[in-house]
Amino acid sequence: MGDTARKPNHRSRRGRLLTPANLLFFRNFLKHPSRIGWLLPSSPRLVNEVLRQVDWDRARLIVEYGPGTGQFTEPVLERMRPDAHLIALEINADFVAYLNGAIKDPRLHLVRESAAQIDAVLARLGFAQADYVISGIPFATLPHQLRDTIVRKTHSVLRPTGRFLVYQLSDSVLPYLEAVFGQVSRGVEILHILPARLYYCSP
Ligand SMILES: C[S@@+](CC[C@H](N)C(=O)[O-])C[C@H]1O[C@@H](n2cnc3c(N)ncnc32)[C@H](O)[C@@H]1O
Image 1 (tube, rainbow, N blue to C red):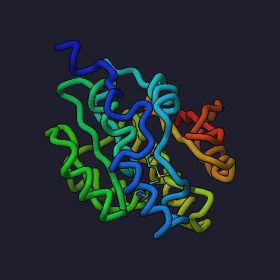
Image 2: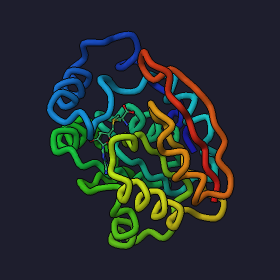
Image 3: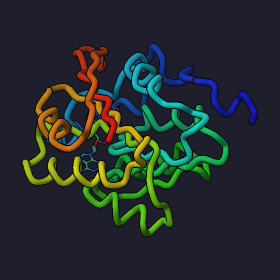
Image 4: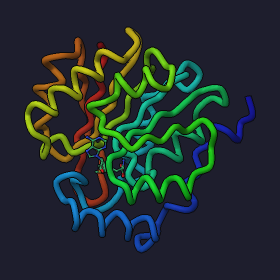
């Protein structure tokens, strides 16, 4: 494996607020506040903290819910194995168009579908179970039934050794996670300005 495939590289994102990606994110937050959840993409500190949980040698299939402008997507691709796959589910058409233009990597399968369809998407793409699911979708603003469906389906597609890595502004998803996952550990990191709650779940 070439080292370059796994080294973090946030040069294009670090320290600059008014990037085209951030402006696109902010404009979409104004259009769909409840679906986007917060004003700006996640901070590199938060991304690094969540991605510290991943065993990159073991991970063959990673799923990302709500990649937005790719704040996690690019670092995941930089770190993951050459033979691993990343399936990203995003419902926002502007973000899907942006990511299709910005990221050219055959290991990325970007799908314009809801996280609630994860089981059908995996089956359609010919994958069985995921090693990690990473999610920043704003559970706090989703209806009860949708939160419940996404959490239960995520549990059903994870390997027994898999993990669901969740970052959120509120703790409203915690009871849903605790109802389904055997173990949920917690952390905190700066999302952009506000603190994010981190939940690391094992089946
Ligand atoms: C807070 S943003 C996170 C963006 C990016 N991952 C980050 O950390 O900067 C939430 C993202 O989830 C997407 N989203 C919301 N509901 C979704 C759903 N049911 N399925 C997939 N994506 C969803 C939104 O369109 C948005 O891109």
